[in-house]
Image (cartoon, rainbow, N blue to C red; front, side, top):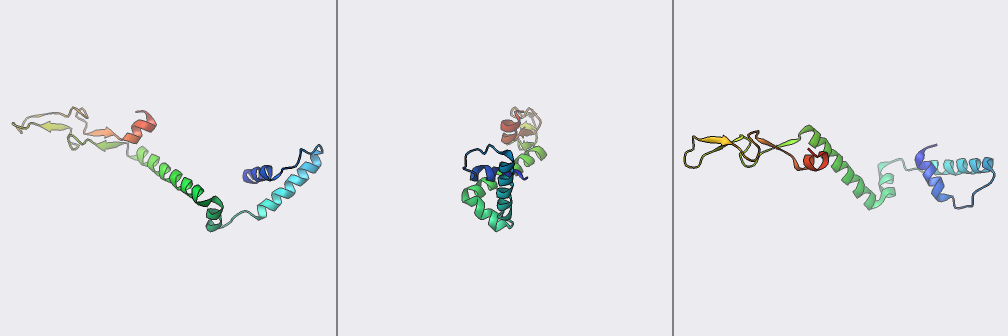
Length: 120
């Protein structure tokens, strides 16, 4: 039996525990069959079953999953101080260069989500 059906049967059954296991199994399967015929099949029925809060939660979960995939594919962002060059040019003597102190000459920083979620 499907897990969702078992949970639905558990919530809809308010009777006292039945001491006869064969009767309980028969009642549970009958209730499970009744629930299975009423399961939503189209996306509109699923959306109406979830309600606005459930849909918002599902959307937030999907956005978070896409963000985590984005972090795994592109973990670094361009350094803002040196514009990704990894070097600073002098103000007075513009030919003079030094490594960027913010990114240590790499030109990239780890993204904020990477720091928070992956602790690197």
